Length: 175
Image (cartoon, rainbow, N blue to C red; front, side, top):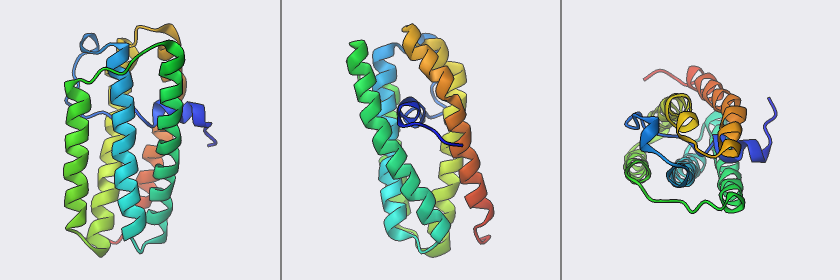
């Protein structure tokens, strides 16, 4: 499935923890902050994985996450700038950042197959959380019609990343 950078701009960035519970709790400015933070979390983990793994499939996946989510952050910032939305820090974005740092610190303690399994397992979980958040929080919470339409349009990209992560996971040695 070929996904454009503008499509990825929103989709790849919206990786949210399950803690986000209600659409009424987020506004467009908060969604923008969540998008940028979530992208950066995946970029950071992907950079570490690409530099650490010896597994060709994990490396390819990690490099794809870095490429896609770096481009996504640029496009997301372009979109919110065009819409006149200033990202607003919020507990979800703060939680994402803190959790991402903890995960990268944990990955630094692992090597070889254990590293690969932990990185890919997290990518599967994270992308599933994205789908849940898009469906239950971000689409219902988006006030701007253009932002909402874009979230609906990019949902398939979340599915594609999730399925790719699952395929990589199935090919890893069991621990």
